[in-house]
Image (cartoon, rainbow, N blue to C red; front, side):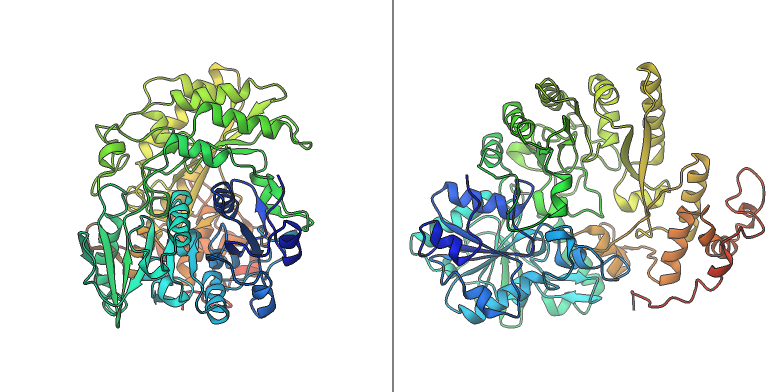
Length: 613
């Protein structure tokens, strides 16, 4: 199967004078099922619609947008697999040096806020052609949202982009319903009934569904309490079964957000991953680095009922798990083993949480997820069904294929869910077969109050997991290690909490090579905390480290042993009244005298630029 056309010449070579859709994307064109562009365009193709791919166009050159002519049905616009602002900037708002989704990792091939920029160009050049936006950037900005980079509340991206329709969540079913409606001759302004879409209108007179009117943009942009309450209303209306239509007023307009799309059935998941992908980047490129992590990996599930407050998966994929059949996963694995550069290692079989291979409870499929109750936090719900059997079946089937030496799990294990399983079958197999020396898990912190703000289990459960993991390794004669993912400066984390985490790292003799600083991105509950200083679940105040110095101290404490961090850590300990941790004792973090290499960091409190101002 050939790649879809990416130029006017390729379109003509494919025998097409006009395509149904032109897909404008901020990523290089990679025809692999880990890329949204590939999934949407291959789905459309299978249903009889033609597509051309306009990948990373020069937004200052109209000719690139005009090259395919006018599509029969419309333009599809996505910033790519990653939000364009996250792609471009670190948490300190410094421009990144590399874009893994671009040929040779070159930075600068897409604009900031790519969805808005591309859409505005298209509406100027093709004012009467539908422009439909989607992807993670649009999905998480479907209503008014705090924007970390501008440090203000921005309008719905539907308003700023001038697009006609926004598609959010998992889009395979949505895009076909939209395409069929447009192909039937319906005006894009009449596509107001489709799940997983948001649209704008000047009147609510024709809306017959039950809906909730959110506070207006003017209200949420001027009152942080109002913003927090509005966010919580949206947070509790993300389930496909239980949610209501949401309406956000603007001056003279309303943004209407329909119910989310229904989770894909197993048959629909199998269909999506059976499409004829080339499984690599277009031959016009030299090398697209993003292929490295996924070319020998398999997506087995979508959705997550973990509900970490700093993660937007729930807002995008939902809480109800969709999973593939074993046969579908094995078929994809066979395709991978036939690739010329396959060396015998399947790098991953998983998803947002690898070991979620069924809905959290039996009621979710029919009745949806609970609006005000979590499945795993603060403790496991009594209705939680813990079952790894389908996942084990998948892994065993892939592991038994000819030419497969090892099947790794790298996409992340929910250790709490694993610990709730009374059957050790999966735990045993994980230790024996599926770890490449180190297993990465995400306790994120050890402070109780920080973990509560994160929506993560208390440290005692993690400690039990560590103990059991070590026991299993000893039982099976393995020498494997845990690498904990930990986060600094999350809302709720004070200097005292950061010191508690540093003491834990000292105790386990672990210094993280990289520190994950909390990054306030649209759509997460933690970002709402960061902006408002309130926990929207309780409306109680939350401490937030926002200044450069505060964040630098929390980050340095996690790497207290680095000489370059000596004076930063010392100042933090003295500020907190923890001089007892300065000395030569076994529990001390630093010595009373600076190590070699520490002298040049005395003036750490004077940043070159405070990114939070």
